[in-house]
Image (cartoon, rainbow, N blue to C red; front, side, top):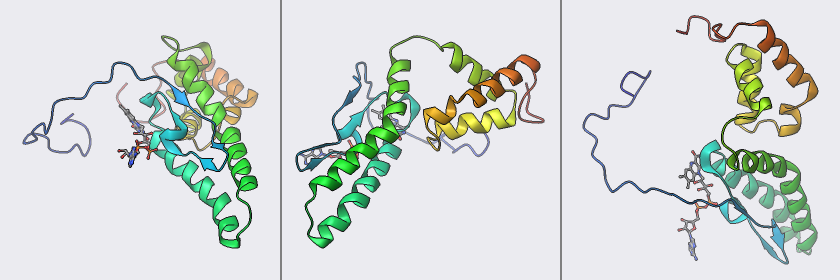
Length: 172
Ligand SMILES: Cc1cc2nc3c(=O)[nH]c(=O)nc-3n(C[C@H](O)[C@H](O)[C@H](O)COP(=O)(O)OP(=O)(O)OC[C@H]3O[C@@H](n4cnc5c(N)ncnc54)[C@H](O)[C@@H]3O)c2cc1C
């Protein structure tokens, strides 16, 4: 890692504890709201950490909950409709991401769509930005896998040889 750009100097680093290994990490999720109890973060959904989305989802679900509940609490209105609205938003925005993360966790290797998207992203700047937008969860699965995006990826993948990099000047 010392050869990475801006790598931290780890030459004097010491391990502060034993390595913690997780061998069995089940995918778990619950309804966003039940009665007057609402769940955010890992209490709502704790799934495969491979994709690095747990902290973002924890902040995001908290923000959605506060957006819904703060005004009704302030004005002394019943909280149940706000919690139902929070639950709907969580389902609408996160169910697709969860579906794809669970789907990947259940198999070994990439499926055809993943192979196509990753291959096109390695060859073309726009395809790379599109994959990044999905990986950073700036867009959802519906936009990521839209027919237009898949057609563009197929065109890139078909036309450009695999040795051609999307990063001009990068060693291939
Ligand atoms: C190996 C691994 C790698 C990960 N990598 C990433 C990554 O790269 N990027 C990313 O975004 N996410 C990653 N995650 C997921 C991320 O860590 C979690 O999604 C995130 O920490 C969830 O935040 P949270 O606040 O909901 O829960 P937590 O961070 O679990 O916080 C809950 C807190 O509540 C405390 N608590 C529990 N019970 C009680 C109680 N009864 N009273 C008081 N306090 C209590 C706990 O001690 C804990 O401090 C990873 C997870 C794992 C396991």
